Image (cartoon, rainbow, N blue to C red; front, side, top):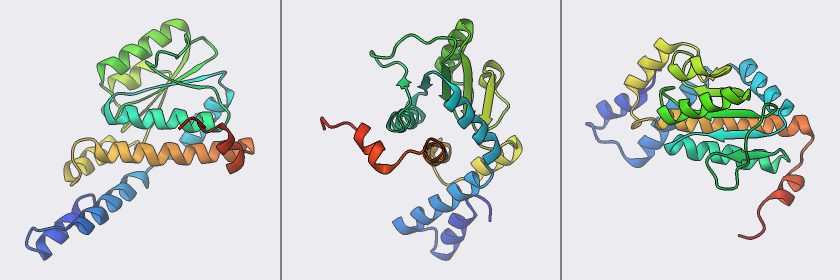
Length: 202
């Protein structure tokens, strides 16, 4: 069943009236459809870049930016040095660091500009996008698409019942949370170790 088909079936059955549970079910189905196409081997390569980097810097804008902030927070819980751009306390980036940016469209001007600046310093730059066909993908040294087939993604998003970039943003969150669990197991991290690094001033 393609994205949107579940919702359309509900609409036809209920006379175009969907209740909240219907929307929740539709959202979960669409999320499963998109994340089901993720190449785990590809993102295991991203995990290697993270583990080999001196420090990790992340950036994104809008709702994607909030997901990237959550990603940096979880990396910190794992004992890694992670920073969010443009926080006032974020240090200068160096050649042995890693910059990871997120953008569904791959065309966000501010994201591309940050990548260009990092490239000029010699930093390894990576992006997470919907596909591997965008200006951002051409600017970074490594791109990690959530789906490698741009035509399937375009068709899926056209059928999606979720507004704007919702499905990418949710897929990004699930992906990065899962990636952190994978990295944590590689590092031998435990729940108690992660909890000891969690903020204790809240």
